[in-house]
Image 1: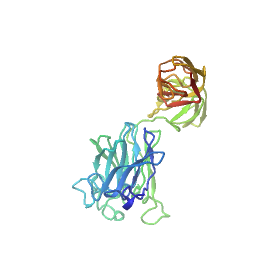
Image 2: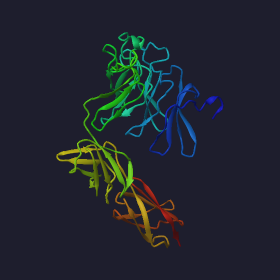
Image 3: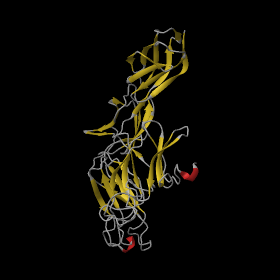
Length: 382
């Protein structure tokens, strides 16, 4: 809460957590420009404004949707209006797609023009398995083809690359009669593990029980992307039970975490498996092999380490300490109360580390490729 809302107001959308552990989001209004902001906020509540939008600004204005975290670690979002497209009939602009680095550098990837590609971008984005961004516009795409759309066009589905070099309008709504495919898609898309995208429109459709404008539709859109698998948790310790979504599963399916075969699986139909993260699992892709077909996850599954014990519990600098736990095979760093130690990975369950110079009494901590863990008790430096 700041005087004149220079930190923004009306945050319609939710938050996304960055790789730094902080949360990132948008406000629809306020800020130094008066027309919304992008901000980050720490779990402790410290807020930093990263971007201020202004009326008709080249970088957009009035973002309703939240951000997504891209595979490259940058954030991607949309604005309702604004942009630089000279063909847009709206004096405030037709909306944008933008990229934002964690440090706050914003790049406009696309400015909409209404006629060709749509306008009024209410919803957020989804990153497809090909790395491109997919979304919807609430209006635009074509003019004068439907009485329902008031000459503004009825909305679109679009695809844009993360560098903004390639933009494609995939579908324009309401090109047929009374809009059997629907119109005015106010929500974003989701990608199913069959490779297709699914979404909704708030109006249109063919229901005879609905008013002339239609009551909305649910639609699917295929762009030729293949099937994949998706874990319902992004991380877990060895022994954790993880849900896996996919296609064509059977009792012969084999699940692997970073190449290590899951210890047990429970099949629920042909699209869902519950798999137990095995011993010596590695951070990496999750795969499911059924017959000759192998489907892979597009996102990394992180195997979280644990520390269960260490011995001895005390000693001077240079003392070799045996540390036991799970998920230790990909250990990258060991510290004693923050001081970095030299170490040797013995196995997935054991690491030996030497008490480093200038170490003080305190906790032992691990950093692996999949995460970090800290001992429950302190090592005493004599």
